[in-house]
Picture 1 (spheres, rainbow, N blue to C red):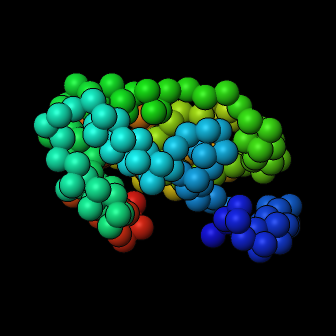
Picture 2: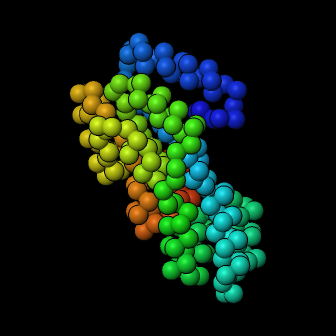
Length: 192
């Protein structure tokens, strides 16, 4: 795992680069949601805190005590469901505002430049924003139901990106539900 707070990340990136240069075997990158933070999107914790604060401030029916317990126990799926159950319109509006497009940052630009140096690029991502796939020219984007097609693309050395969580629209409709998020969050498994 590459973590920008870990001193091993630099050396891991060097090793990854060497594998790519030598082309010893196909390379498929797992790009987690943390990369979106480099572009200014919130992580799960920040998103949950935003929802908690907003609903606490603007909805008198919101169960603040329950919400606080959910945030403190890191039960973010439960919090999102509580918000949605309390006021669905506000929930979707806040979600849309939280995931609206962001400007590139120098760190994100450098990351994308690094990805361009890997040919062919093969990525599985948990990012729900569309930043990654719109930043890489000529890449085939696959949604989770089409992931099996990636094997053919990998064999043919064609670039692809699999959206493990789908796009932000499908996230709001299908994935920000306790059963689904809790499964992914607790088990860290995405693909079946």
